[in-house]
Image (cartoon, rainbow, N blue to C red; front, side, top):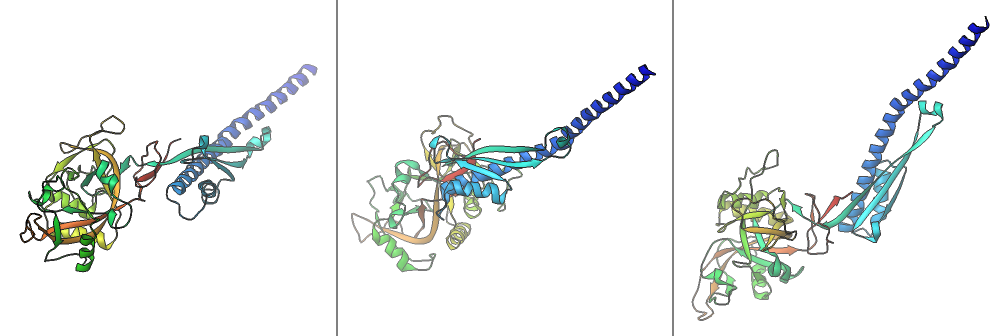
Length: 374
């Protein structure tokens, strides 16, 4: 009958429309998931490209443009079909990357959507490190003492006492009668007397005394942080020696307060630490202290903190030697003899892998780091 035919036709139309709706929902479930995964993949590509570009800006030595490096990492190493890197706002310390790929769809093609472009963007910067690890428990006043050290030559070398003496530690106050250091007798490392004599005779080596440098109590590493040496926190001279060998993994942040120790006593552990880092030419980071915090907001305090962290510096251990001091008033008389002195060199081009950067540009001798900011 006519009515039945009409109803049958309407049913077919309804079924057809329902199939379209079902296919659309299936496309949303299947292809929507694929689109989401591709966008996550492009986010990873954009992140990796931006970090690679910022890293190249900080530390690249091969002459490749940071923008080229960023695009290479996004496309070649992370699967983006297309990428474009720029300096946002003309700021060459930051690198922004847009990464895209085209995704051929399956079920969505039935409803007229054969492909979709999945994309993401990210921005990374090269800046002064605000967080660091790999630290020695030695701290130097950032201004003027650290910043007055040169970046190369003997003018970049400084010495640190490993035992206390009221006489020799009076330097550099100006009232010291013990300012004529000469090589003493006893074990030295490396075993090269001429090397240490040449450093002493150059007159360029800086002797850091009280008020210029100090020994800092570093906090205990919370689990699951790496602490292969089993060093404790706030534990006195023995822990200082332990952290000299193992280096503290951090994180220690700018504006944290670190406790102070009276000094490191010469011991087999200190000797082992200096010899190890001298042999391996380890790049060692140290916290730099000041009386004020750059951001104005003081962070965590550890070990009854006295040293306010204002930044980070890098050094390389050069060895140790026994040094004796003659009196200025009477060069025939001695002050202290055969005091073990650590020799180290300031480094002006080093990096931090612990993350965290400030908005400040990072020229030597600052410790530089790279981090995502968008």
